[in-house]
Length: 53
Image (tube, rainbow, N blue to C red):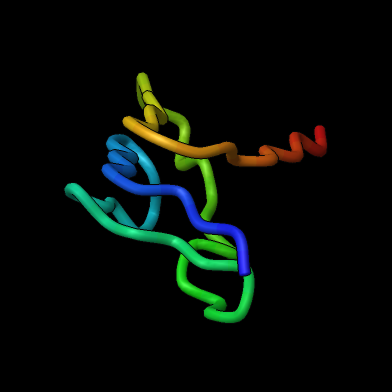
């Protein structure tokens, strides 16, 4: 399946550091912004980020 490599998420409920996310593994699916400055980056691949306010 598809994958995103080198994923960094800071300032979120569940921070990630150089993670690999794949379409068949739920890691990162239910992460949440927690009201502090946050960032999400990916070295290789594509992420879909949904924002609900």
